[in-house]
Length: 438
Ligand code: DLL
Image (cartoon, rainbow, N blue to C red; front, side):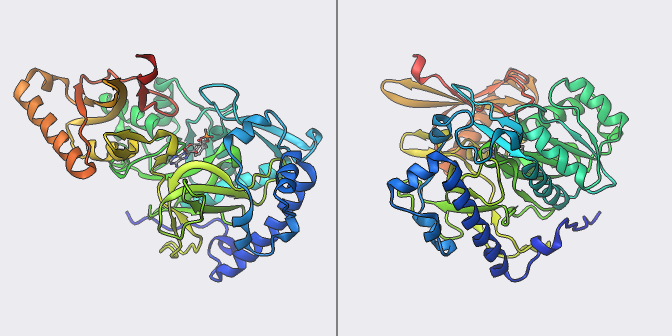
């Protein structure tokens, strides 16, 4: 069936004259900079230290003269040091899960929550959702921004929400069938797990799924097409991070050709991670985000560590906003093996070309003889293959050759029994780094 283009806020999303959006951006940027300077000691000290006054920013181009904000800056100001509003105006706190140390905290005023719902309403409608849909939200509801973040935007477009949160997979599937969910909101990893059980139980024919709105982690094209097939749905990705709001920065429309940025709410730049210089559209580098519409916690030039590039051309859906290409990975997840730099998603993409392997994999890093070594562990779809030695050998050889020819990567490959890699209801842990504990 031909998918229909749906647009929540035509005035903003389809503005033909991009200079009008840029005028909004500049206006909001100048307001936000002054507010951050007046109310947040961290920004005031930093600007004063560099001899910069917010009023010196006269054009969007001047943004490049402003200092970056990093995750360490957020940690140093934990928990509420970057808030630009008194706590009496802050109505919600979220925080990133952060595996070590203190989490990154985000605060929201009532107006921020309204802005957030608007950002999400545009994204989910772009991905196909409207008031006729029943959407199961399988993101965690809690400090994580995913559950609550998607919730209010989906409610705003009038869809029926099933706020089941993450985990309890059997119950997820029962309600998915009983309530006739047409939309699923989850991480691609959790969707992969759900798809696995759906296949085992032969449930697909009982489900009405049409749209998968996935985010919070990278998803290769091969992972996407696998999910589209196994769940018989249109899969889009949407992007965001706790530091600047949560989900809502950008999202793919039904044409899946880059994520439309909510440009009146965020300025997204791409920089060279080494030099900090701004890069032109089309060139990949680190995503840097400035918030334009956050009251409680404005963030100036936040270095996300995510790698992507900008696509300026208008999309055939009618939206004119710049798009963000799929996030390739995070600079801190980049693996360097024998002089080759790689993101997990690149390895994923090659491995998933082979129908004999499932989308469950792990990358194990070890240090041997002073060198970093990578072992790629991939689960087989059919465990009985392991009993047929020559077939295993052949498949291993084919995958290894493909990894070498596409990525220049020579790594140990292990084909594992099905279900030996831990499943997750949230973000998958792809990299297991054993280098420091050997
Ligand atoms: O993951 C916010 C979110 C929730 C986005 C739900 C989309 C859907 P954090 O936990 O702070 O926030 O993690 C942010 O996750 O810097 C990226 O590295 C990664 N990430 C988020 N969305 C995508 C995506 C949420 N669509 C970090 N593709 C970000 C690739 C993503 N990576």
